[in-house]
Length: 295
Ligand code: R5P
Picture (cartoon, rainbow, N blue to C red):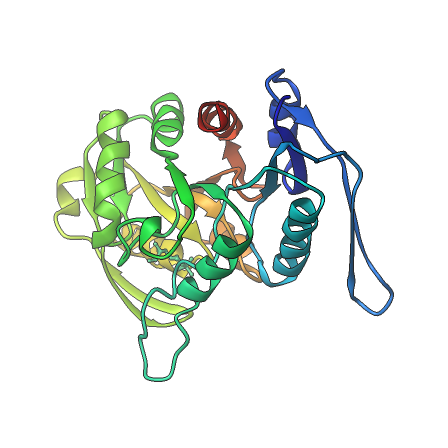
């Protein structure tokens, strides 16, 4: 029997890409909120003795997590033989230590919760800074996919003479990969985050690339302060307006509008989180790897 795919919090492009593949059967799930706000879930497919894949991207996770857990639990109760989670964006990876006394290390609790209900997880470029691998906190099998290839193709196609700029030291591992795939030079920012919404940046050795088009790449764009500070810094150096690329388009509040209003040429993101800035489609990467993984 083919694996059954259920979409809970997916996006249309990814769903279309999955529907076009004969390796999967597409199942149906119905969810709603009762008038009092509690969640109702109904699995409208027979999942007994089936391998099931649940698709849920986990931006703004707090409203999604209970329905997700109820769904996994219902699938188990209805006889699914395995339950995998395809989460193009994996939440709660940034609080990976106690930065201040008393703080909850939410990455660990979240990983435990997901590991308790699923058998495996596939995601794209999770925020692995202090953790080197998801295995440090997830006890289930995991596969991490990378957007580097898709981003480098976009850059090669759309930007003449790019200089790739990474947001911080930790980003160097993957920014260098994108740069090498795009056959472009790269630099990494010195960043100092003063609070949730305030960051300072500087770019050593940028003068060498003054005539290049700056392409700032970050894994997550949330408040966009990292991108905006960098764009403004490049502007004071009289560089060309920057192109801002993010993998995961979280964009809290007016962050997207604020970034567009800064001196940018373009803002482009991958479609792990559905957003008007999506310009790099990762659906083929996700679907191909899903096929490999569930064989
Ligand atoms: C930080 O370590 C991440 O890689 C991103 O730079 C950060 O999450 C971006 O956040 P914001 O858009 O709020 O500056």
